Image (cartoon, rainbow, N blue to C red; front, side, top):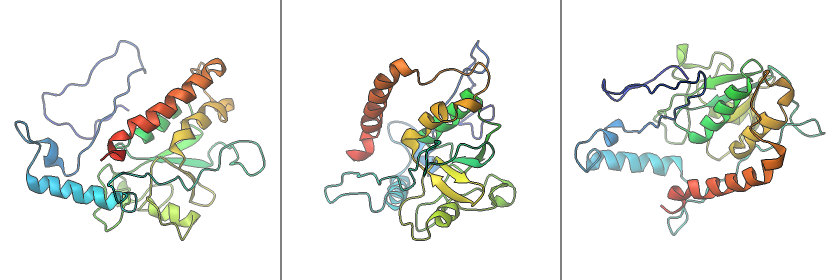
Length: 239
């Protein structure tokens, strides 16, 4: 959280917070970059817009209805963390959280991991926020040395998805949790992932960690999260 990957120009200054460790900034990336660099009322050129639309069409292929409505795919790997039979075991240093700085849903899981002090028990892999030029939707570890994740030793996120299900046909999404014993994705349930960090991983929270999911407020938090999920994703749904 202390490193700026890209800066729009030299006039931009990082904001300062008087309380140490409290400030989080979500930075959004645009691809192609000229789309957000134009002057006046228009962003970029018509060609830039066409390029962006082509990227969106490729990324969301199969999720656009005949009326043009975005119908989000269901998450494929939703087995919860827990202690019951059939659930993902809560074990330190067994899992790796994969994220991309461009995704707000991935930011949620990374921020919660940081606040709760889970960095020492759940490792973190970072994907390039700019997608690779492929005929399908994927993410790549091009920010790492040799363009492979140093732990998983893979170049594309899809490799971990295919280890979990060789016949997987959906989008490769972040955040994703990979089981280091198999190298396969075991959870990509971004909507519930922060709740698992807060509840199921509580015994590994750092001393003095904030209670992000108080029992007396859980019904209200769940209701608000439901609103944010459906209305916050409304732009794509109504596109």
